[in-house]
Image (cartoon, rainbow, N blue to C red; front, side, top):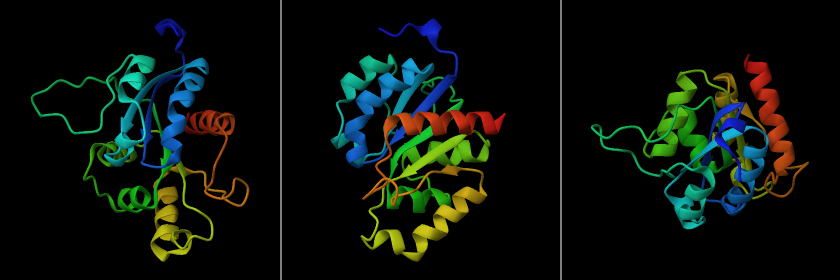
Length: 181
């Protein structure tokens, strides 16, 4: 069991989109905790269909959120030091680049982009599937990079949908944090 005092990298929000990456998040949480992160999970509405919310809450010791809270309700999650978009969909990438915050996950991405916090996005758009060559997608990736977001999208190295191994993601997240300091 991971103990609170072993977290030394800070609070990591894992923003999970509705892709097969969502099915990996349970294992990834444990690896991130072992690497020193206090982890909180935020789900897009579609991602709620892919995960065991109760198990994630037990793993993280934090509520798993997918909806906005009422204004008078207290924040139940600590402030994030960094965000990881774990399996960013075509939809999420494009809305985020435009500043659309029509769900909690996008709202947090827009907020933390404005706060200039370290964010690593792992898009999962299949190479050769049509969405990867849609003009809005490449423009959105460019826009997010211009905003200071670290976008790791190499589907030719991790085919077919940018299926990056967890250890590579954690290493990239570490470099993002080092570059941000």
